[in-house]
Length: 375
Ligand SMILES: [Zn+2]
Image (cartoon, rainbow, N blue to C red):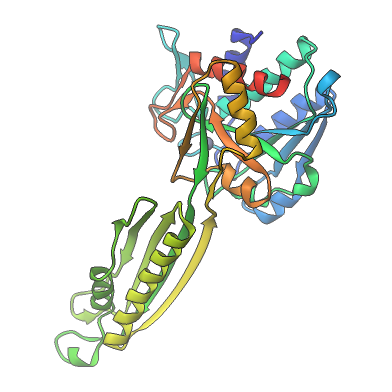
């Protein structure tokens, strides 16, 4: 039923539409026209654009009424993000000589992350339509700003959606693979303010902010904290002439954890060490903690897992539930009360110039979504 040529040619078309994060307009317009021409109700989620003013489009939502014997079942959401990372403009895709992959020309990413997910949704709709297949009411959700902090999925106006179950088509691997858990994520940014002084003439009247920072860091547990929790310092900036006792040192670090309590404990530990160090040297600490992801870990009785596992069992697919420390749109949807998991889209080496679409997996993954929404 999956039309291989059509699915691949759609994918090739989609990756040539520039849609680097915050510049999703062209992609949004393409989808709005495509589904409007097919006669569906299509909405642009203006509220998401207001909450993400840097973007030049909002999330796009398409509604397919249920059909036949499944028409009155609960609504299912299929989701993919419209934006890509950089360098993502002017993609020139080609199929490799062995016919197994789609690649870029090496000067840009390919954008299979997540145009493979969007292409899957277009092919699923086409198969349902031309075969007149029964299915529950469906909602397609195409988000903005995933790559810059899951912005569209967090900002989505849930009043525009009926569905409470979502399949996010944005993972790696073949059919059967699902991401079922994700982390809490805290960004800690701030500065230590000491006191400037001439380093040669009167160093004893100064407070060296970099010395305070070093003291704090040397007392912190960092990197892998336990099975669930990690911490990393990404930035410490202090840049003065050597004859000046440096007044200000700025920093940025992250804590992520699959376990709420362990993550909070580690966050408190980091702050405590910073505070102890500033007290010891008489400096001042200013900081901000921003939680951008919220941990989730679906158990087997979760409706979205149940539905996916049952489909895997019917079709002899090897179910694999993976917990991932990176962020996906599932974090935003879960935050908004929608049970979601990530299914494989078909790409690999995302965010790299070597990114490619594995054609076989891409096609098999489309088939698995068709099974999910027609049985
Ligand atoms: Zn992605």
